[in-house]
Every structure is written in C-alpha cells, then in structure tokens.
Image (cartoon, rainbow, N blue to C red; front, top):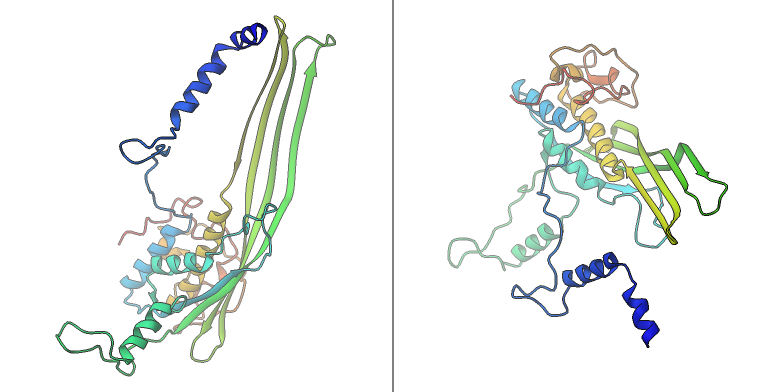
Length: 329
C-alpha cells in the first residue's frame, strides 16, 4: 500500500490538474438550469454563399431592370448517384440535399418557384378541403377548391451528382532525424497535399412538352492538406513523445453547392436571354469559351445568349473577376 501511495504521489501535477478540470466540466447532477453541461462554441449563424451567389442576385436584378418576366420553375430530384458511403456506415459521403441547394439558387436568381419536391402537405390540405374539413375565416364556411388554382411550371430542373473522385493527385514529404545515441533527440516532420473532385449533371426540361432544353455538366476540384510534427526525447530519465498536426479540407458539400449554383446561373442566364457575365460586369476582359450543352432561347436571342461563356471557370465568379458587381440595383 505504501509503494502504491508513493507511485501516485510522483504523478505529474499537470496530469492531476487536467483530470480535475475535466471532471469539473461535466457533473452527474443537473445544475439550476437543468443541464449537466453547457455546450461549447458561440459562433453566430452566417450566410452560406459561394463565389457565384452574388452573380445570381445580380442576374435577377438585371432581369427586373430589363422588364423580363421570370419563368415558373420547379425542382425535381437531384440525387446522389456516386454510391459512395462512409466506411463506418454513418452515411453517404455526399450531401443528399442538392435539390434544396438548387431551390435556394433559383430564388437568388429571381425565378418564380412552384413546389414540386415535397407536396405532401398541399396534397393533404386539398384532401381535407375536398372533404369540407377545412374552415375559412367566415364562420360556418369551408375552403373551396377552384379549378386552375394551382399555377403550373414552365420548366423543371432534375439531375444528379455523378462523380466523386478521391485523390486525383497528391504530393507529400516526410523527413525524420535522430542522433546515433538512442537517448538523444529524435524528430520527424511531414506535409501532404491531395486533390479530389465532385461532378454534377443537370438538365432543364420544358414541362408541357418534356423536351430537354438545356444541359449542364460541371465539376469542381477540392483540395486538402495535412501537416505533422513529432519530437521524441529522453530528459532527466523521463520519456517525452510529443506530436502535433494540422489538417484542412475544402468543404466538400460547399463544393457541391457551388457547382449547383454555377449550373443554375447558366440556365437562368439563358432563360432570361442574358448574353453572359457582361450583364453583371463593369467591363468584360475575359474571352469567350466553348459550350457544354443544348440551349433553348426563352426569347429571340440566339445571337446574343450565353452559349459562349459556360466553360470558363472565371465567368460569373466574383472572387476571380474584380469587375463583377455586387448585385445591387
């Protein structure tokens, strides 16, 4: 018992202090506020833009300035077709909410949206109204169902996330050094960069005819990095093994959002009859590039639509072209 007591007494004071601090963070007895522990973090809620968000807002403002009527657009299923899942079974690697991202992008561009993605509540309301179960503001009256009360869509967008390619290319360096004496200082350092990408295919369909009038196929590369440092040494009979590292991966789901917004931006520019990014530029120093799909002229604008602007990644990108306006009209 005496030897055990002295072994505990020799434990570093820092370890004991850290242990007491950890136990103080969580209590088995709820506090006055009814909580065992308070959550950490105090970051405020912020907007979630991509490099193309300002261009979407700018395009919608340009269309209003030109007196152009926005088409009614619905969003269907934009599914994850990569089939990639986490190894631990926790879920898919890619967001399943690309359709919601497209709805947000269309709203930024000034499109008139009609709901087709989740109509469960509307269908239930219509069923209740049809059975005279929903009352209106007038006492004793019930909600009427009128023919043609639901507006139809002019176009709808469908598609999917079709690519998720890991480690397209990577590069790294690892180095270690040590003295010949086993008890002397030893250390190692490492760094690694790797690139992956996501791909998206969207199509715009005219609702009445089911004609595919526009097609978009884009990809975005994502970069990640890792840095590590380790030290191993014997000092005064004690062993010290210290390591530290830092890693960062460009947000993969935000890359999907950026790709969706770029596709929606090109489709809406075409429907509005916009000639290209120059409608949101003070000047357009960039040259034209090739097209990625079919084009449906919402107006008589085949000679001036955005067909020649789609491939250049700098087009519409506020971070790459300082001449892009802020979308204020």
